[in-house]
Amino acid sequence: MRNVIKITQFIFLGLLTAAIGEWQFSVFLRNDLDNFIGSVVFNTLYMSGIYLVTRLLLTTLSNRPKFILFYVVLFGFTGLMVEWLLIGNSPWGNPDANQLGQFAYWACMALVPLMFLMGNHHLQTFIIRYALVYIALAVFGQFVIPSPDWRFAFHIYAVILGYLGLMVAILWKYLRPGSKT
Image 1: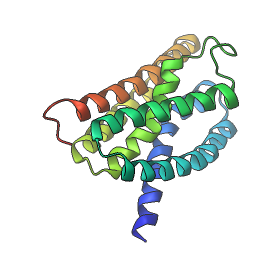
Image 2 (image 1 turned 30 degrees about the horizontal axis):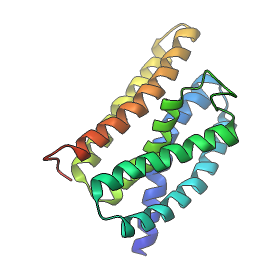
Image 3 (image 1 turned 30 degrees about the vertical axis):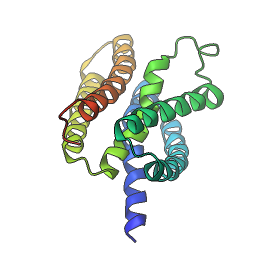
Image 4 (image 1 turned 90 degrees about the vertical axis):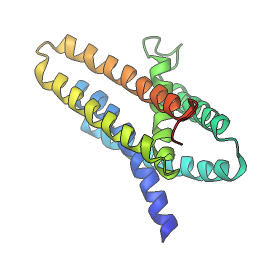
């Protein structure tokens, strides 16, 4: 039963991490709730696979700093492959798609639940605060920015910088000397 709770929590946290940015793209920008629901279904399956790989990696890699860096690179690039091969957001298929932002989005989808799985309370608190501020800013931007063009730009850059900022902040807080890991 304990493993079921861990798996469920891991998948839910990954879905929540992805859902924030996906809501901005699918609902705020495109008014496409069906796309949002489809991404939740896909991401549920994807997060199930991430959990299995994560459990395997946690038992085989003992050097935590190198493990975290490997983990971010692995799932950031795995996510880019999803973007490139399944969604069509490759550099050649959609040159306007921000590759670094996509990398950070997919890396965070795996990294946030990992921080909760590993029981890092300091980072868990930081992530919750970051998410609450991010959500408040996204909602504020949606309902306060009057121009559709400005709102579009706001959400695009919010997602890119928001996920990139979260990824870098987690890595910085986790990897810096004297961190509470």
